[in-house]
Amino acid sequence: MKNIDLREYKGALRRESKAYRQSLPAEAKAKKDSAILRRLLALRQYQQASLVLTYVSTAIEVDTRELIRQALADGKRVGVPRCIDGTRLMEFYEIGSLDDLEKRTFGVLEPVPERCALITDFSKSICVVPALLYDLSGYRIGYGGGYYDRFLAHYPGYKVGVTYVKCIRRRILHGRYDVPVSALVTERYVNFLKSPALRRGSPRE
Image (cartoon, rainbow, N blue to C red; front, top):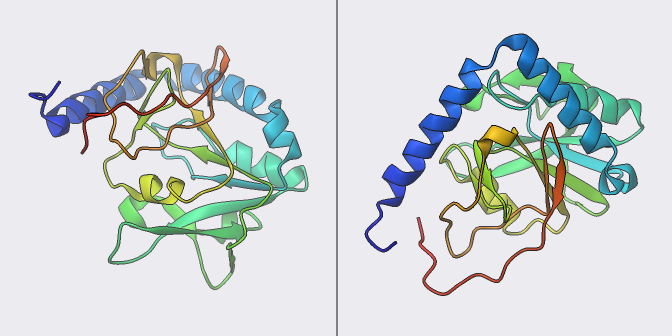
């Protein structure tokens, strides 16, 4: 394990996951996304949450735009991240609709601050976490920016990973301070996780 170059290791897994996602026919992806959404909405943690934090999906990610619409229809508050210029940090702003978003960092839709309120209280919330890959312990490989890693290190609420079955591995190498999600939702099943004790000598990025 000590001789593994983590950047190369994670880079190879990212490329593999992106290739799979890009190969999905639109109809097949839509069917998977719909199944994931149904399972997510059925979670007790979602139903009890008054605030839903979620990314806004790009073309290769599990769709969250319908989640945003449904959460708002359910009377929940919805928070979406906005990257802070010049840092690897992000803040969540409450949106009232998809019209409160603009294309910004990395071409991702983010809230327009002038239209939205900054969220500072995350009580009674659930966070839907993006990733290219997850493992069976809830650890993730994202896009490499570290924005969510920094946010999740201090986030007190329930963390849910949404992904496709083909984008789950038995185990992926993770850093000592990486924070796993509490549940994985796929098109086939929901896996509730107990965070394993972090082992000494875990590789760090």
